[in-house]
Every structure is written in C-alpha cells, then in structure tokens.
Image (cartoon, rainbow, N blue to C red; front, side):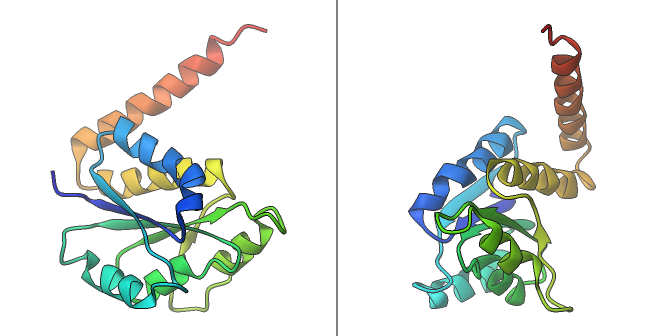
Amino acid sequence: MTPLVGLIMGSQSDWDTMRHAAELLTRLGVPFEARVVSAHRTPDLLFEYAAGAEGRGLKVLIAGAGGSAHLPGMTAAKTVLPVLGVPVKSSVLNGVDSLLSIVQMPAGVPVGTLAIGEAGAKNAALLAAAILATHDAELRQRLRQFREEQTRAVLETKL
C-alpha cells in the first residue's frame, strides 16, 4: 500500500519515542513510511523529502525532533501538508527545549505540536489517523473502535 503518513525524525535515537507513533499507525491500519531526516545534518534531503511528499501520495507528516527541534518547522516550510511535531525528550531540559522550539512557529507556517515524548508520538499517530479519517469511513470506524477499547479498559480496571 502507498504510505499516507510520513514519519520522520532527526536522528536514530529519536526512534525510541517515534516507534510509539509507528506502532499505533500499524494498529490502526494506516500505511506509513519512516526514516531519519535531519534538519541540520541533511538539510538538502529534508527539503527534497518535504517538497516531494505530496507528489508521493503522503497526506500527513509526523516529525519528531529533540533539542533545537527544527525538523517539524523546516518540514512545514517546504510543504502545504499538515505537519505534526513531536518534541523528543532531551537530556538537557527533558524535552522542554524541544517543545518550545516546535510550538513557537511564526504565523503562516503552522506545526501541530503534541506533548513531549511517548504521549506526543501516540497522539500524533491518532491525530494523523483522524485527519485521514475525514475521507475514509473504514479508518473512522477503526478509530471509534480504538476509543471504545480505551474506555472499556478503564471501566474494567480493578484496584
């Protein structure tokens, strides 16, 4: 199947966080591609990837980055596709630096910014699926089922 979501990260070490998005996209049956694309070490690759994403059939991009976290914003600058930014927890400021770098985009270049770390990666996958589900009734049903399973798990919790 042609990937609908591009899952990119600034370095291999970001996979520890971003794999949670990949796992949830897989669970929901959303085809995606995943790769390392660094805003600082491979800027030409980033520009090529982002500029060509729409032409390759991608509909949503999820970009995870830590530290200075320029990947989501630079990706958004090169495409009109929705870009969801996941701040990866950093060793210096526990991801607050990443969060602020992603969320403080100038007007005109939006990045939907999620929570720091695993929760952000999971929510980015859910948000990407919800965006796609606006035109895919089967995916919308799978999202409903996911939500019902979450509710059921909470209701069945015994302490």
